[in-house]
Length: 357
Image (cartoon, rainbow, N blue to C red; front, side, top):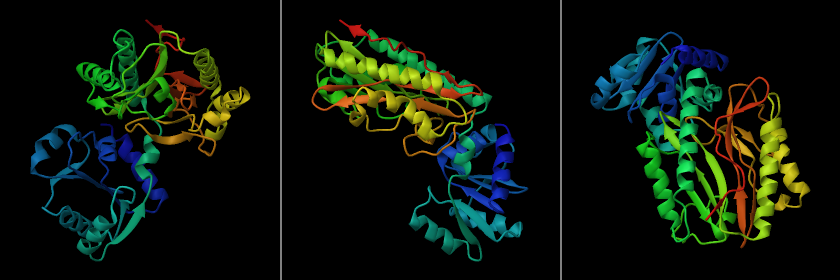
């Protein structure tokens, strides 16, 4: 793991006047150190960097973590943290307020007598927004696996199949091809359930003459993909093909016209305005997209309320949809890297109206 991330963290700490920062988030820990175990803490000052873990992970940490002093912490980790801070004459400690419960905070307070605890939000997450070349390569592999999974499902889906079985087939396929897991609970929503934006796979039996929305992704090498495609089985009602074409037009337009420097609100409008123009604005109730990386939902947001500025190096989803209660719905989603000139798609599955028979 490059020490460049540690350097950027220290720069961010200086901007917030932080002498020391204590990292407890497992995602942020892996981002900063490359450690893939399940227990460990990171303590960073302007000049020192420590990785604290217990006996179980000392060997693994020595193999994975570079640029940090690796320490086996005491049964109570704050005992070790307190000793390190005292040795460095540091009296203030930043902690991840979004990752620490109130009960844990109170225990820190009790154990770190004389240390001022400073709640901090979004420090490492702000660094994670911008993907480096190594991260982009890993995300491309996760996106490639999502594409491969979609193509596999085109050969598997058929009337009579239960949604849960389809989701399980996707999970098996992704894991057989290297994924740690799916990025999130797989959405398989068929028939009238396709009008549920988050219709996680159920016991419903897939039938002829309906749409199936598949929203899924692979967690591969620590990074997520997130792909949605909607396909038809048999001959669904003409209304469903109509909204498919509208969603496709909106999604293609957004992907083509998103540019760095836009706000999330402006990017959202690229898709939303088209759907509204056709009279379906009230049936598109979620945002156009979100950031993607080590977590499936990160900054920035592409929504009608977002003032986030899109910049090169960010990876976002573009996923407009239309949902007609009792009838069915359509969503189409790609993972896109913001570049200097626009976007580069990471997912490449066909978006043509596909009919399975």
